Length: 131
Image (cartoon, rainbow, N blue to C red; front, side, top):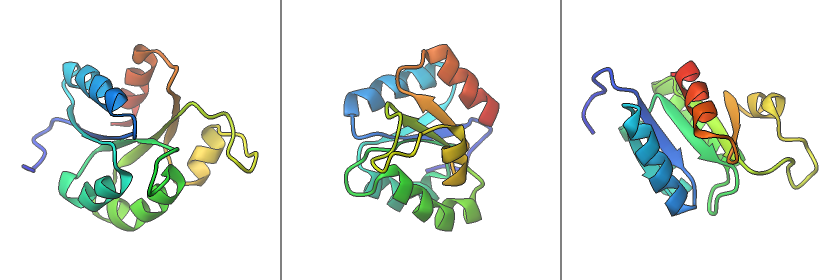
């Protein structure tokens, strides 16, 4: 991957491939460089190569869920490349009953929360605010 030349690079990680494709297309139309993954383990392996400015991460992923991904990410990305993380989910609470809100997301190392049901303008506004 070439060095970032001022264009903001976003990595999307979601096991719904159609979501990754549609969201990638939308973000590219706003001028972002987008790399999509439907496999969280593969994404984590490539994060240092991709050098994203922002990661959009689904919580419910096979192999490595979003919570564990962020723990691993702190050891890789935060040292190398101060990337931001937006958590993307439809969940209102965790399996253990914790409310999924901005406070929980920040406590696990994320920077913002987006519900998959949010409209594209709201999502783009949060992205622009972070990168």
